[in-house]
Image (tube, one colour):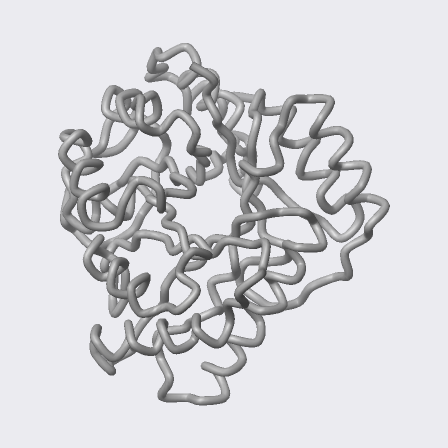
Length: 301
């Protein structure tokens, strides 16, 4: 089986996509996810076409298929709440810009959180998302929007397959919509990830496996159904390593990119320095062997 595995990586003003690719290679990965700027704001630098071209060449040399690479839209985008028209319209405008940036970079998938209804109710929130996506999506765009499954925290929309299906059904050019499954979010929303066979069957029945574009691989700090959304490292939470191996190596998901978004780990000697665990987590996944001392190993000087 050709495992498509990677993680969230950085994207800086100077090295841009090339830096993201080099970081990916250092983790032993063959795909990756990045934000085209800080996830908490909308400050963005111009895309350098020469750096992008070099990045594409390095990807080819290292067997990284650009079709498996994904961008994540910033959290500030909220398509579910139209109570503040200026903020709603800005979210629409900015997501359009992010799609254009993906096109400049040659990336074909962008992940978004569907949105928070902030008191207007789930049904109205879903309609707001539909209305926004109908303004955003162009018939001939090359970029697919991946709606991420959410935990149900606060007023989040999209914590169930049925809610996501409603969004898809309401969008005119819904052939440009895909789904990103997030294992932590699904667990926290109440899905039993220890019985993934039934979960994926339900997904296929409600939405369809042809709509699956990406999977976020994250363990959860909380019990199933907690609706809290707190990621933890693979095998160190309530989902468990053995369940992740069944999910990651599921025969129906071989062509789907799997992306780690697990927390950085703090070094013992400096509580201000954190390090990505992805190199070691990817090795565990490839070896199919859990290292219970992983975090201690990374933390030691």
